[in-house]
Length: 497
Image (cartoon, rainbow, N blue to C red):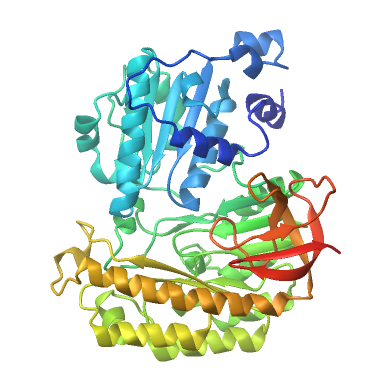
């Protein structure tokens, strides 16, 4: 049977939005010790399988993916490995023979969420002996053996890689050591088809692993290793496959997307990758996330300005605007350079949408430094902004710095920036009033009782949405022209044109 047919059968019955189902599974409370009804429905999962396929069926996998979009791609690849090796997938952990938790360990809050989820799955395993618990991702990469001490129910511990060994290790039945965390090496094997869990019509493509930056607040280079670009042909092949599968939006991600190609032989660039993707696919929206500011250069801007399929959406994490704080953060950019970059983008692409993230409460951020940041946000008028309070992470350079900022002060600064940006975002959204925008339809929102989607200026999961007023039945993944009539908070509202 073809791999794509097998993938279709393996995820049968999960519904159109696997991401939502996974989130519902994450939210289940297994902590009260009450017995759980055994609702395993293997027959429904095997519906449509041939006798031979049923005979080779190995079990049911439930995977919970935590953290960033890069982790989502890893999870999709793991699901692909399972289904192409004879496993089915469920969105209900109670049904699963194998429980997989793909963790995030970037900051304290993310680590706590991962630990809590492992505890929940450990409790479920205790209620139903015979289940296997596999833990992967950044948290296991970071803490290794300690994880096994804290969570003895874990049967297999993988880090942020080595996923090509996943199936043999799962099927070793205890013959292999539980701790299989290893140093990250290659850019990963992406030849196995993924089980896409993002909204219909949209897919991430991870163009590299690791990071060469040395930001003082970040642990990622220690967890994911140095930057390793995937090859041009490898990426082109995956993009073609996604295009053939009906993807309308391709989202390029990595820890530092603008660095792509600089480590290849011969050396290449993000602009050249974009040109190749344009030539080899018909995907209407090609989006990039995580652009490092000092590498947003003229070659990239000129390439984007020339092609309408390269949507002029710039996700550039700036982190701060005060030169002193940026120096302590070990960031290369400075305020004047940031201003020039923003001006250059808007000069070449007047309709460009800009998004950034900032950290408040970094060690040494005094009131004057904060005011520099606040003033810049008011001046730059970025379309979308995310603000994070500094998280003191052991193993980072910032962890040993003095002049720590009181958490209450950091919270006040967070509130100020978010209030300021909320007003800016609403004003920026008003420019779309009366315009007809192509909207990628995602789902019917039961709470709002309308169809929702995104136009090109809204990235998946992090920005606002377009609420579509229609009595027609829409198809998730379709592109629909919508005339924008209102701004509702962070969202736009309109009717099909």
